[in-house]
Structure formats: C-alpha cells, structure tokens
Image 1 (tube, helix red, strand yellow):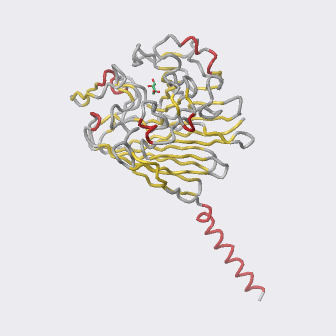
Image 2: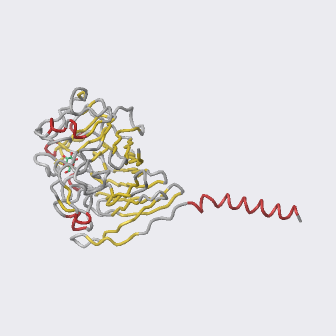
Image 3: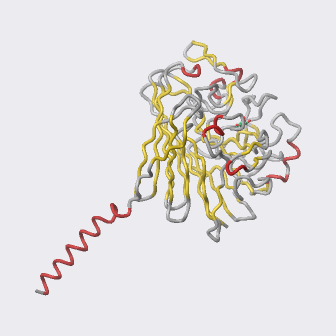
Length: 377
Ligand code: GLA
C-alpha cells in the first residue's frame, strides 16, 4: 500500500515537472481591431504583458510600438514612448516615425542615389536633398504588416512579416522581412530582424521609438543621463550625410563615454544643421556581437533603459524636429521632449565604401537584434 501511494506520487510529481514548461508558457496575445488606413486596410493591435506589470502595444501599421508601460522602483507605471491614439494620427504629418520599423534603408542616402552591380538606382528624396528612412508612401513605417502572435516560457511576442516587392520605393529585389518583438519576463523589449532577397539590395532596418523615461508627454528629456559606448562618431556635411571619416568624440559635446546629462552641452549644437543631437555613433564593439550601446537614466523616476545591439552604430537624436504635435491622450510633444536611440548601420553606407556594408545578396540571411532593457536605480 505504502509502495503504491509512493509510486503514484512519484508519477504525479514527474508528470507535473514535465508539464511545467507548458503550464508556465505565456499565452499568445490576441489581435484587437485598431481601425483602418485611409485606403481601407484594417490595422490590428496586440497587447503584450509580463509579470512585472510591463505592457507593450504593437500595431500592424509600420510594425509599430505604440505604447510601452514601464515600472519605476516603486512599481509605478509610465508609458515611455510617443505615439497616437488612432491610425489617423499615424497617417498625419505629426508622425515622425513614432515607434516604427524603419527602412528598407533607415537614415539617409545622399541625394537618394546609389549604384549597385553597375546599375544606378534612384530613391525618393523625402528629406531634401536626401533620401530618409526608406522614402515615400510605401516605406516600411507606412505599410501594414502581417502578424503572428506567440507565447513562450520567457514572455509574449509578435512576429511581423512583410515582403516588399521588387522596385518598391525604388529598391531592387523582392525583400522578405520578419521583425519579432518579444516582451520578456525580465523587462527586455527584444527586437529580432530577419530578411532575405532574390536580388542584391541594400538593407538597414531600425526601430524608431521616441523615449521619455518620465512618461510620454513630459515636457523634456534634457534632464536624462546618457552613456553611449562609443569613442567615435561619423561627422557629416550640412545635410547630415557622413563625410566618410570616423572622428573621436573626446573633447566635443558628443562625448557620452561617461554618463552625462543630455542638457549639459547641447547648446553648443543648436546652431549646427542637426539643431541638437542627431548623430551616428560608432560603437566600441567587434563585428556583429550583441553588445551594450547605450544606457539612459531618468533621475526623477529612476527608470533606466539599456540598449544592446548587434549593429555597428546608433543614431542618437534628441527630437529636435518635434513640433508640439498632439499625441496619445491629447498630450503635446514639444521639441526635445523625447529622444531616439536607433541601432543601425551607418548613414549613407551604400555610398561609403569604407563603412560596413549594407548589401544583402540572394542566399544570405540578414539578421540583427536590438534589446531595450528596462530597470530602475
Ligand atoms: C532620424 C533622423 C532625424 C529625423 C528623425 C525623424 O532620427 O536622424 O534627423 O529625421 O529621424 O524626424
């Protein structure tokens, strides 16, 4: 009798142990309707949560992060990214790539031109005189992506997929992309990028969230402390196209190698073409290892955000072109009320032979990862 019940309980424990990973796997988030685009395409929203109270809302238009609720040391949540309450907001002039997936080639391409395998290509010059963030009406931030939600034992996520047809926005090749967002149980928002092509083509995807760790709609981000793991940056001409040189940050207002308050030296940059910080930093790292690029801290809430990436660069942008547009909950977003840390290859790489290449060839797989890791100190 004793042996029997012992056997039974052993079997039960074994079964429970086997079932544990399944029992603890998060559920896949469900799609909710989020209105439709001006041309009648339905947009869906997915809400990801984790056990620490974090919430991330993602919409299929632009594979966009729309809300990101992050706890401070006391557990108070704030939504730390800029965004809009509806699709019309995202389609308005006020949308400066808020939270979007950006490409096919993020950042600038000089005069919207490049030559690949002997052929010249022309792209939209939507940031006169240059091409910016993939161009016109079919850039990746504006198209509606397919979505596949999932749950794992380490969090919830959504994989967005989109195949950009050959010639779309002037780029060669059918480019099949997958962008996977995962909100993990340890407060990482992880973004994994994957792409393949049937013709050689430039690819440089990034994520364009505007962060304010006090909460979106707080008046400024100038009080945040920033560390950038970069000894060098790519100096530019007056249209923000790199000269091709890599210059030291040491002795300039661009030096964030030690944690520094954003406001400390920004005044030295206001009369430059960038109007503040809008610079690509060359990260201190080897190859495509996943490494720390930046750490941001808001002294008022204590919230921190570390940025890790497989990319060689990060564009640090202090929202110099924000224009008081009204976002979520009717809150205005004035100049410098948020900042972007866009991990990517260097601007205009397609025209700069000494920069790491952005060309993807048939048979190769493009893979990049960016992690926004939240904490409090
Ligand atoms: C990037 C650019 C900025 C600006 C924003 C969007 O960060 O570097 O100059 O164009 O996108 O407004």
